[in-house]
Image (cartoon, rainbow, N blue to C red):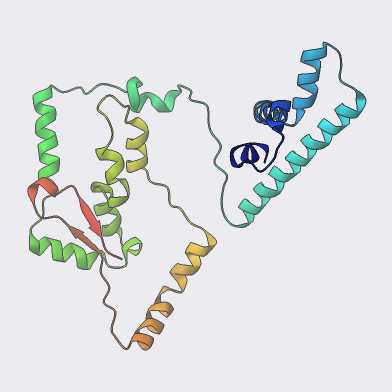
Length: 233
């Protein structure tokens, strides 16, 4: 408020020179870096003595409050079907020999590798007739194995941007594992939506007096876009 008053001339006395604002900034930085024990750590570093018992009890109380708050938050996440993601340290183990800079290099010449690449892209090309057949076969999406196969072989809108904006020198091992081995995300709300989807469609048809036709995946028929996939909801 002192800074606001200084600019708007709401006070006759400039109280910013007392240093209270700077002190609060320093305290916020120490609290962020050192946690609830920042009072004791700072006091010991400045005075070279053990902090007072009152200050130690205050820091212990703040530490316990933070631990209880994190425990309650973790419990709420588990009750709602969510799992808290924890950052794992990057280590080199036996499972990383297939990805990244530690993976085995291709055991074929570049010409043969390029030929295999063209063969895979050619296998993904479909005509308009095949496009309609795949669209009919993938209605219901996750309930049909064809939907999973076509989805794993092509890029969807959800990951298209991530792939296109990646630089040539950026490692792609994590992205490749994410695209090839997708994890099935589920939650209580998602399961409820799947169970009540047909009921919602029937009520929508009654309310709007119309018929809802199921749609699935539309694959691009052009040879340059055969690896792309568009999903309709």
